[in-house]
Length: 118
Length: 108
Image 1 (cartoon, helix red, strand yellow):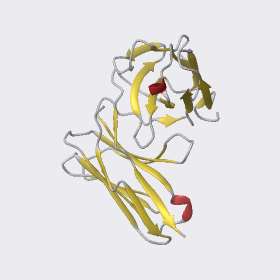
Image 2 (cartoon, rainbow over the protein chains, first blue to last red):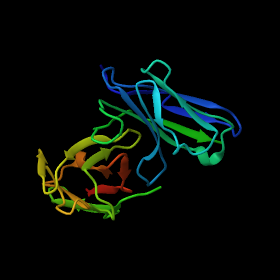
Image 3 (spheres, helix red, strand yellow):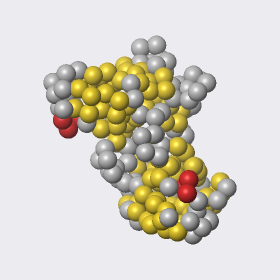
Image 4 (cartoon, rainbow over the protein chains, first blue to last red):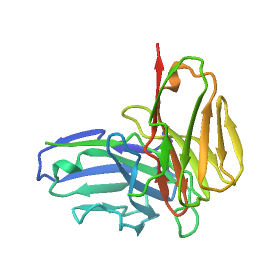
């Protein structure tokens, strides 16, 4: 296992286009998280899954953002009708979690997908 | 979103110097984590702290979980060029809350 894998690593798109990012977590991890990071800031939590269930999505930035994890393995984050303010690094992380809450887990991050919206 | 107060924002140091950075919060956390992020990469976990008062080392890195559960510090001893990067603290209750990072720069 090579850790958390994200692709594409870089995406440049025009405003109004849809983009999709993929995350492949560490295979034995049941929890998967999406974060957004802008320059000079720490990661900002977006959503997380335990297996295929999306347990928290209230932090998704708008209804243009959606995430799926259909089989409890890889996940996709889609941004529809992109805006220039969506330009950021989108980070995926996974952990081996227990219970209902996302606490008491150590997250392993992928290298991120950098989005630039022109 | 909510963030921790992490300081300093950046540090310029000479190779071989010791480094100290800290995070404070108005909230109590059950876990404190310290991550390092290199340019264009995701954060990598350095040290995890699970108990108030806990002092943990990882090579030249030492971190402590404050007794009030509202703060943590990270020390790096005898810095080397590969220590350059951005260090983030994160407090965990139900979710991770992140500091804004401390950028470490080593003067040539």
